[in-house]
Image 1: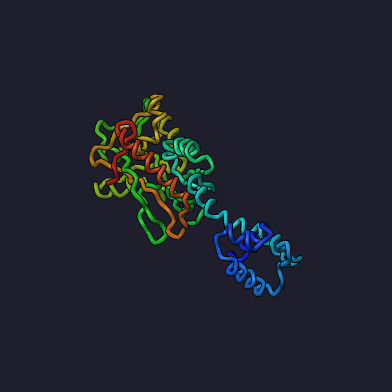
Image 2: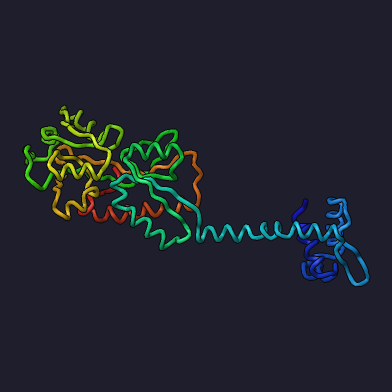
Length: 310
C-alpha cells in the first residue's frame, strides 16, 4: 500500500474537501482525486462518500485511517527520532577493562559520559586481559582495553598507549635481597607473583626473559590484582606491573616501583572490538571518549608511565 496515498486520504478527510486539501497540499485537485481513486482500487473498497457539502469517510475508509494513522505518524517521526538519537544517543554499551585500566579510567569514563551523554548507559566489566579477550569474542562485550592483543580474523585492535613496566617491591623488609639495578637478569633472582600465562603482561615478561636468556622465578600465579598486590605488600614476593596498577599503594608508601632498565619493557594497550559486531552511534561515542582519556593520560607521562603507542 502506497504510504503517500494514505497520507493524502488523511488530509482530504481532515479538510472534508478535495479542493481545500489540494490547495493546502499544493497539488492539482484532479491529481489528488486520481491518487485517492488508486488507493480505493488497491483496497478494493470505496473509502469516501462524495456529496454536495464535500466528502466524508465510508465505514471502511474510517477503519483504514484508524489503523493506518499510528503507522503513518511513526514513519513520519523516524527522521526526527534518528536525529534525536544522534544528538542524544540511548542504549547500552558494555566495556571490558583489565583491573589496572578499571582503576585508571573506569570512573573517569562513566562520569564523563554521564555528563555529556546522560541517556547512554555504560556498563563496565573487569577481568584480566585473557578473560576479557574471551568475553569480547563471545559477544558479551562491545569493546575492551587489552594488553598486547593482536589483530585477528575475529578481533580488530586500535593502539591506545604503551605502558612502561615497573618492578614492584614491598616497602617493608623482606627475607630476600632486592636487586639494586632493575635489569631483567636481576628480577630473575627474586621470587615473583605474576598472572597466569593466559594474560598479556605475563607473555610480555616471558618473551623478554627468553630473549635475555634468563628464567623468571615465578613462585605464585594469581589472577586477581588486589590479592597479587597484597602478597607483595606482605613481602611474599615481588611483581612486575604498569604504574597505574599501583598508584594508590605508591601514594600510601606500602609499595615501591622502579622502571625496568635493561631491557626497558612496555605492555601495549589497545582498544579491541569484535570484527562482526555492529558499531552503533553509542559505541562510537564511547570509543572516542576512551581515546580522549588516553590522550590526556599520555600527557602526564611521569605520573602514569604511559606514552604514545610504539
